[in-house]
Image (cartoon, rainbow, N blue to C red; front, side, top):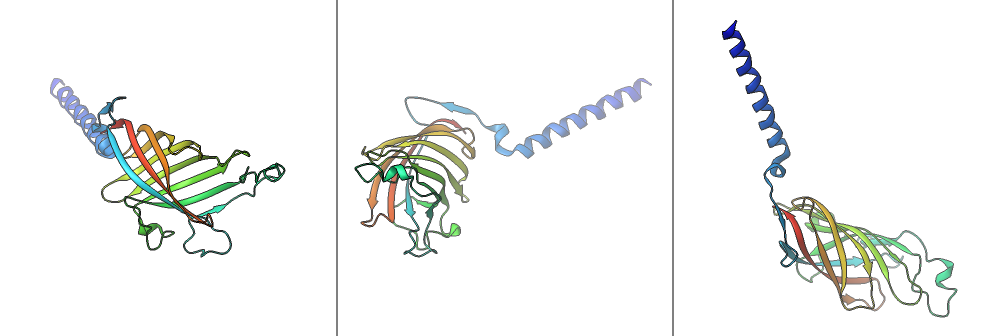
Length: 205
């Protein structure tokens, strides 16, 4: 009986170890990550350029990367100044690049390894102002996952900060700040390019 008891104990221990090993493999890197936090120096930095081509019924639908989901509210035209599209919401799926050059087919997801997907809405009557909520989606062999950004884009300022409130994949639970600065705007307002400097102060590596 003692021999059988010892054998049973060994079998149970082996099953437990096998289960823990399988769980570790299933969770991939997450089980081996360490938390890095510093509010003086970022644990990760990157610079990307966001390209937005809004569909305005006259430009090419194949190249457009954003479209208005709502019209400006009547309040936007009930004031003495233009109203700056107050109440309009835009949905976008914009390419993001490491350089300033616009991809040949910006609306095609396979053309770019990084995209910004989300919404922005105009929320001020007296001056251009927007509120953003979007995910930066990485889909390449070098980086996979998302960073989630949100906050006010105060267009009257040269630079604006959005909060990085979380992430997934290679950016699991990351937090930090993304600084936006307008890099180019077309004369008809159908295209704009924004420089996005991302600094993460909480990382799991």
